[in-house]
Amino acid sequence: MSRIGESIKKLRMENGMSQETLAECLNVSRQAVSNWETGKTQPDAQTLIQISAVFQVMVDEIIQNRIVKKEKHRRYNWLVPLLSMLLSVVHFTLALKGFLNPVGVMISVMLASAISLIMYTAFENSIKNRDFTMLAGHKKAYEADLSRYERQLRATSQLVSGLSFLLNVLYFLLYICATDKRLLLSMSFLGVFIIGLVMILSAVNFKYRRGD
Image 1 (cartoon, helix red, strand yellow):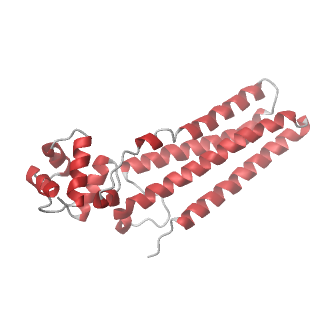
Image 2 (cartoon, rainbow, N blue to C red; image 1 turned 90 degrees about the vertical axis):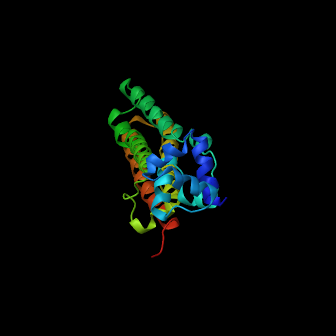
């Protein structure tokens, strides 16, 4: 049995799927699936992309038989952007009670939290649907290397969420600052977030840049 065949069989069985069901998903015959799993034949590149989409794994993981259950360490990825937004809600609630300027909260940490949450949702949806066209430099010819795009999107999302969370934590320092300086400091938080966002996008794009 080939590595690819082992991977396909492992994925199919882990997902409680019969050969017939997988064949229907891929618009191939049950015998074709059986031949892949026994190593008699191998799926072509386009079919590998389809298989990766069905089982939500990367093509190179199928080829190298590196199928691992990733849900455990990805299960809590949503916590950071959510906690960031919750902290922003806390700041805004306290602002309405007179502790801070509500406008200052909205244009700084709340905006940062909203952006990080939107990015997380959009990127995870992009990964789930295997649609990476939002990435600069994306080309259809690169779609066999989907793991690179997944890592790029998740790295960007995690860093932006981390930055937003950090700013929300540091924002508590404004409660002890002079009242007349709080709005100006809130705007500085927005500036830090924008600069940080640009730096994160540039650094991640540079790291995962692919030469033609």
